[in-house]
Length: 343
Image (cartoon, rainbow, N blue to C red):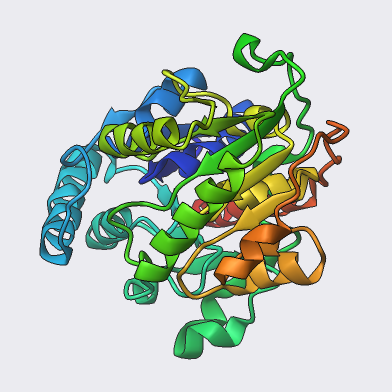
């Protein structure tokens, strides 16, 4: 019997990252068991990709550090209980540095492989991880005494699921000649949120309000943020659209003339696909984003005057082909670890 791969989705982008890995492993006969947190668009994306998942933990996210920590441990306990029936099998745990997943797997004595692409996120549980796969621009030294666990893969995290990507037909709501700009705000309760990022977010919207030939596609992170941003756009007379259902992110990005974000994933996806990308992310900039800036694929908005660097015009909407090297490397690495369990 093939070993079991236990994949955990802690956040919506995890679904995109691991979907091609899961597909490849299952095509080779491996049994993949998937758990997920009910947070943001995670479950909606699972349904979109026809992935059957077991939901574990409390829905939503805590608003304070204490509440977030409690939720991590509560979810870890739920995951531990879910996986008790697999203890007689050989299992490898795989996630994108999901803290609850790492704790549950460690308690179950399951070897853990994690992916990570931001060296300044919470790394307190790396000591329990067997291997940490990271994009090549991030120096191993960032992990100090755990540097021996770092394995570089060629390319970026986004390459794992953008390789072979082909955009589909445009959405009816965007089937016009206006300039399409995607706006992804920062998380309202994210640890990196700051007064400067709020100022920049407001300045970006002020700047866009001076262009009458645009439609702003808003991708808020929660219903309350959606209402706040929509009201702000109405006051500034900015034509906008908020999708009512989960959409394929890369497909949507390819229909854009620019992407502006306060987070990380969507601005990096845009950069990978050759779409003009702008970030007002206010946390510590990691090696991956710095690499994208130095290669001219991402523009950093760190001051009010930088907002003027946003180019508001139509572009040729052709996606840049993305290499499959990263996906081949990651799946081959996981298979090698699974093979070692048989010996």
